Length: 89
Image 1 (tube, rainbow, N blue to C red):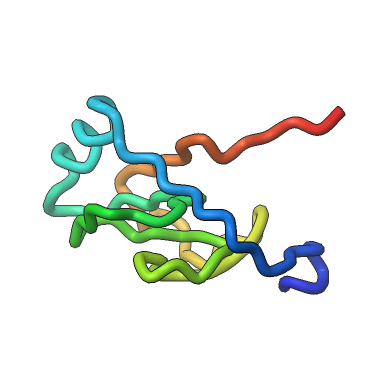
Image 2: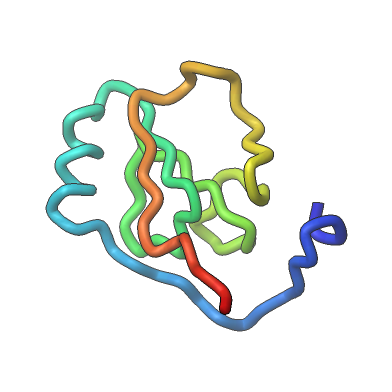
């Protein structure tokens, strides 16, 4: 995956906390599962959140890239993706 996607090792750390809306979603589905797609490194870990990330941070649950999500349909009750999308000139 890394080779196909052009991913290289990095020392950069992405660590954005959840805002009020994100925390509300995590709380709303406390008995379900929430996917944090592009989670970055999380200082606070929630048992009902699966941290999906291309970088193997200590809080990453599952590694992966792009649109190739390794999950069955209807696995999650909600999906978060915070500060993930970038544009290139």
